[in-house]
Image (cartoon, rainbow, N blue to C red; front, side, top):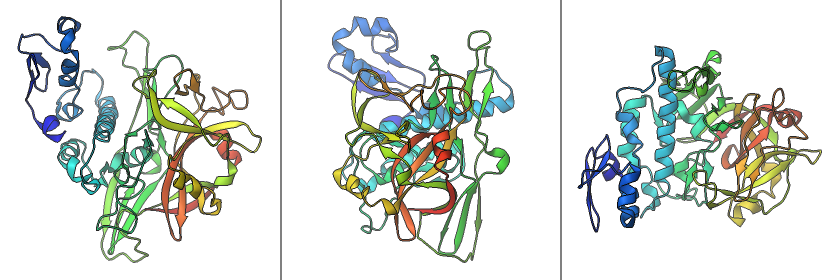
Length: 408
């Protein structure tokens, strides 16, 4: 995968044709662009090879030097950051579909591509995640049954459970943004609810923080020059994390990649499962294609549907949920109230609503959402178990309390 995506020029040999691909387009030896419908129709028998050669390359965005939008410098930076995150998400989603001979190589096998992104985005990479997108990326969602890449306590390098690197199988980023209303082009990106992440290891303190003024992560930008007149697109305004390192810091050393932060939490018993089996959802790119991921509906004390939890697939992980005293939900990010009806998660036949619109406002005040991580404590440190999305009113009624989290 790295050989193909990092190469600025590629030649593909199929049974019938030779294709050339560069940073601009993909061409057949006949001279036709593979991106046109005519070329696909002419070579219908060769359609699979045409599609295979025409796979988009997310790294091309990080090599681009200009943007197609004519906007002021501040809005240009905002648009650039939204595109940066989208490019990163597309790359990791594509990479996680691949099979590794050795699961411990999950970072080594993507190091070249991450280096291209890091040179463009700037800042640190923490367990394969750009620091400025940490709170978005750590809320990745599973697309199929998962297993740990490196069992806890074994191997020289144990990947942290909050990172996608710690788990096999495909990942997606369904909770990073939210579409509302009937216009799928209007996307709202999640607001961070964490002021500061920190790691302390071998006397070195690493703080990854935002100032209170930077916590608003979305704004409306009018790009009517590139869309229909009067139409707006909601995109994220990301402010980069700043990183500060201090030597000879005292405190408990929980090891590398243990995130420490303050966050609001509620007990796992605050929300019940509507059913154990759950609902099978579709692939996000193909609404009519059956996926391999189930979601469970969460119920508040009134037995009202208030949210969705991404089901941990294996029975052994489900058995762990029986030990409820060691588990709790942690608030990571959120979406503000919406003036449009929110979309649910698609299934083959319909969709799973994010919450019951008869029990909670489907728009306006009280229609906000929170992204939470279900964690399990093992002594002084906790592991990620799965993620969920809950109506903000239901979350606030559960009376969350602020707690110091140490997440490995």
